[in-house]
View (tube, each protein chain N blue to C red):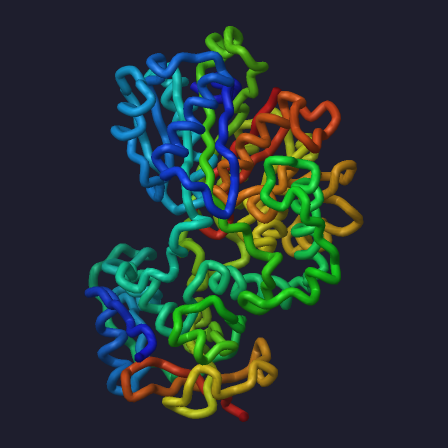
Length: 381
Length: 140
């Protein structure tokens, strides 16, 4: 049995994105889920499967009873924050392909814009790895990734201009997307180079937004997909990745900290696919930090080891470049909702309805957070 | 108000007990002698549950570093920008300890200018009165 093209995403939905939305996470979740079902033309009582993140605070019971789902026979949650985004779709695809369910909904609702920053919580400290890092002031995800970014730049000669190329591509696409938080705010190289530091070598524009918002998508089997309201976007290949001796965002304690979960997920993804990295028309690569993108470009096979920085040169990530990136603006410039907006934007590209449409896009890679146990989807029209 | 102290667990506790005595030790498999970090119940190489805490020279080299700026927790923001370094241990290169490069044992996080920090620089472990590991340059 293979997952290949046996399921499809047939509905996407989202709320508005903002620094502050007045409604609760639960209400936002309901709105995004109902919007996705409406987009698909599927009634809520037909839903029998759910998947979300372990960090999602609106649980299955609350969601199901509010929006009127039917009897659920499959529900799962994936850990590791933004590493779980694509895995929510992957779990549903696997469940539907295996006959455990017929209509799945994946979602993420988060008030990270107006709510607290998780790292400010000093009461909840997991002993591993926090006892080895937090007392020394390595407090935030930005600090943990900046440590790898500095070494990456040192070892391979990557520069801040390479990181700027990532930030700029995302911002340029956000400037085309009215739903993006940064829709009307262009970014220049001067703004980037003079921005305040967050954790050297990462500056403000290397960090994702802080956003309130929710998104959802609907997954069904390929037969059912043909009867839905929208053109199906097939889950061609899907993978999770937790490499041997990986340590999460503080991947400091193995032979090779500069390779990570992307490499593991990619091996599985391509092995079960009919296409290669050269066939990818557009990519939605998880961008909580700009520095994750060069790593992911290497991990998913778009370039060799250490070449991720140089890959971004010459407008490679822009529309018309060799790999248009994060065409809705990504976590850096559209909204940061643990990467779920990258999934929905991948669907829009393959429907031909993106605000920054890549002509004739037929294959889209979507990835979840690199630097944590991750996941990825290869979507095809 | 003090900085954060390690919230430890049964696996990590011996590290901090030795650090409080001014010793930098790493958990090592008692059967196959492979060191491992962070500490854990069994050896990922040979699956043995027998381990010992092997002394190290406390010497290492800076593998990478960051300089955090606010927003930070208040007690850290008060010292920012400060450095956080990652030290590759000479005795066990796969083990890289997070710490701060300071002027002398017990000195604050921002006691050394970030311009003094270079990847590859040799450093030596020192210990605070509270039992935290800090690092000083071998050749200041």
